[in-house]
Image (tube, rainbow, N blue to C red; front, top):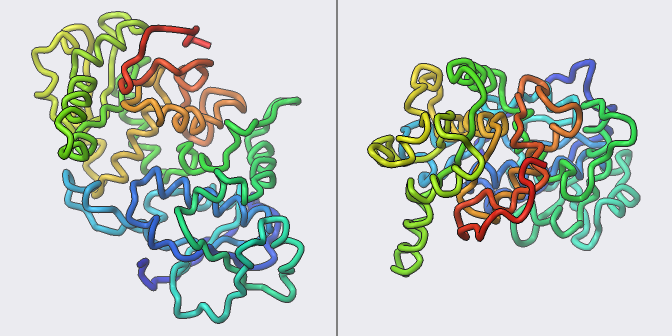
Length: 368
């Protein structure tokens, strides 16, 4: 569980309208050891309900990193939440506070929302005056599932995001682009040092670039009981498979940033390396040296992904998550709060930009 360290985040002049009480979701035990994208989705869902209830969400003071996500760099198992996220900026969207959000020690001081009571019911039945400390107990599944199942009202935070991003008249988010699960995944709220690292890397790249998230190690390991599965995934994620897909839309000689746990030697001597200028995290050791954990490194790579002109994912089912993470691009495009959003975020079609399952051929205009 999260440690007992307590701290608060001061609320600036741009903070969301005054919160009437505190709110938390418990327990976090199932979500806290999952990957960074998973945790960001779950925390974002809870933020939506806190915003709707006009309460301050109690966030865990640390984010814990599963050992499977931290083998390459020997950083701390749990890192301070504010080392990954800009909580001051987040405050201008939704009221939050760092606290021991998962502790059962003070459970008696919280009123628990009834299991069948959704967001609107909670707003009506649990007024702040009588219930200043409120909690929702997530009985089964992961936190983010409450948003997928529409048990959480996301309208308040969506409207707040529209205000903060000064959307053009007539623009609004739909169910696919609303920042319900993608609030933190957008990159807007990564900490200033992480944004600065991404900015320095983009400067060294020196111009437009394309990107690929090549996920092999953990997914190949998951296939060990099935040789056929492992063989299929291995073939679909090798450099020649990446080349077959990327060359449809990227001219030879272009820059291709590859986010992967594979070493650069995996690509050496391949037609992919001969066709493109390949870059990896290892090309930017100076910029990444201050980061002591893989979540911070992946956060920087995520900022590079949304800044690319084209983005290729490994698995098709994750493509929608990337596009939803691009939701701030809909405001004005370009740069938002220090995050550069590139052409990959405006593509109107993305069904073919993944390696698994292997795409069958361009069926639409990927340039939007």
